[in-house]
Picture 1 (cartoon, rainbow, N blue to C red):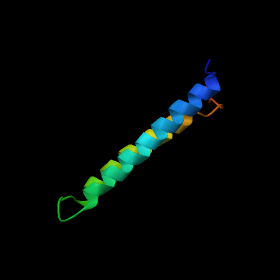
Picture 2: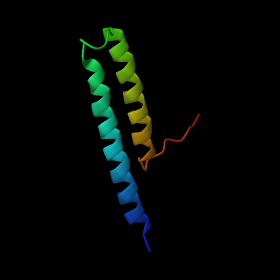
Picture 3: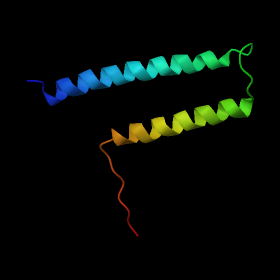
Length: 69
């Protein structure tokens, strides 16, 4: 029987490797002889990626902020 820790290790490893591979593939779009893009296009891509990374990382945080008046 697979433990919760084993399941986390299996899924997190696979998903992390899949994500790293997709980021490498995204890097192929940097080939200026095949694609045309602006610095703003690149900034939009990386802002979106950084935003999602920050949100996802916060899900792993054990500290939750509570609202107070």
